[in-house]
Image 1 (cartoon, rainbow, N blue to C red):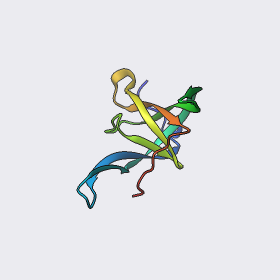
Image 2: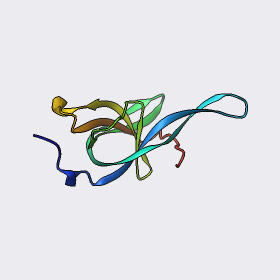
Image 3: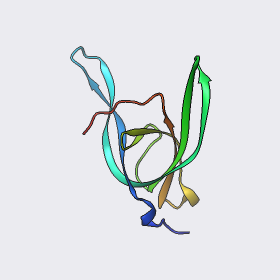
Amino acid sequence: MKGINPGRLNKRVSILRYKESEDELANIISTLSLYKKVWAEIRPLRGNEQLEHYKTTSKLVYKITIRNTDITEKDVIEYQGRQFLINYIVNPLEASYYLELMCTESMDHTERSADG
């Protein structure tokens, strides 16, 4: 199996990366900013619901497939206002044609990003 069918990559997603900057009081703050946009396939795998700190939280796990690019587990994927935190990255068959990102969408804890 060489490569991936490009027709499967039908969602335009943004890769957001944390960028450190200083505020007016010289404090270092981290904000999410746009790193690049890529085409992807988003597939839900499973979900779970648990009681955490006396509050019910829901987490959905997704597999996001993209072409091979420089992405790390620290980056965040954004699609239509939803944010996906990357748990780990798989390079199938070590062929470096495409990457499978195992991500979690937390329904309760979404982060704010800077548009740009």
